Figure (cartoon, rainbow, N blue to C red):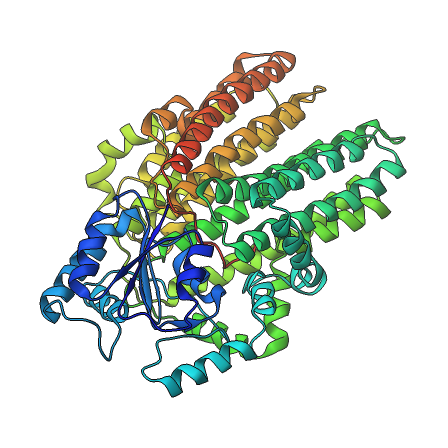
Length: 607
């Protein structure tokens, strides 16, 4: 149970102690800094602890926001500061220094909690301060100020604030205007019945899988039902995050489930559409389009992740392009237009659902490919311009993140060691240039030559060399964030074209399964990095071969096997990769959840 230490003289009529208990805290009283330090030392190190001024006046939800959010090791609001186990030593040091400076006297005019927060700031600790908006959180110094604060508390509708704060601060047009106005009330309904965000997330996944099953029937009724259920799944997808924000039920496992299930739902639905097209009256084979849509969407995400990681902590971060973007954001209608152009998940799923119900799977995939291609071009071009016009120093952390996202296997690693000295003498644009050229060569060869010919294998061998050269030195160049997306596109498209060239029934579905398994591995890498957990272990990357190893193996199989045997080999490879990465991923995230690792803070870019 978390512990709250109330400091200072109790105030007659104050409800602070009961409010802390209602939030699950075990409350102890301390007259001053010395007693607070003593009580703090007695709290077990694996428990959350909070120091709260006894004179605090505010909304219960302001206390909830400040003291119970599991995503941040240190957090504070006026009159209260809290630390999770990971930051206990930092809080203890600040408390000891404050006690020594204050001589252990009772709190008089200012607040001990606020002085501790100031000491944490002076130490350079990262203290989260939630946006309270109209919520009150204050430490009144006299009876008149206390009365005014209580009146301010009474004037604010705490429940309305909770409902408003449940909605993500930055979201897409469809989500903001067509889903959130009512999904927040579904979230409140779930909270009042004790449902957890993870349960809602699971319900969203099940609904999407049923939608994919309906699409797979190939009938008009099935397509209509699939579209309706896909929208219902998205409503639940919004609800789980809103429920987490409404009740502050964040968790490591929940963040992973939410992100992972989003991808699983969308790509399972693509497979359902492809199955439905093949089973429908026209017996239309759109597996290549389905796989192309998955490849394009995954590469879009890798562009987002790589760019953000490359500039996560860049110093001297200036760019005229970024300044123009900020200026456009000041004009209301351009904000929504730009958010819709990038085709975030709300717009994308709404388009897929409507087109599924009204048209055919082929038209749905054509529209999806055109829309995502335009969005990818728009966002990537803007980020390239920002990178070229930005004067910034990339850090070792950013270079390490990009190297992890590159997913280089043992072949590229061995080559990189031998090419390191030569790579350091080459121009700064070498890494993305050779990654692009090597990837383009193997993809073009796979697309333009006959199945079974030697040229894709020759190009794959060249791809191994260019991949090694691309990562032979730290990825700190202005455009080095393009290296992981180029690698993803090269591997995925090579599999797609070789399967298409095999021209045997079942080859493209097998390729779809393989790319899905590998894409899961790449998404899992991203979520680990964003959660500050590091990349997957090296044994896992080596076991599944790295991007260059898998590309070489698939090209070799296409040369050595018949088309039918190649289909079987792709299926086996997909199953093996899926089993290895899923078992390790589930083990890691469940273990992280059990030790209470903080959840990923994600309130920004719509997926």
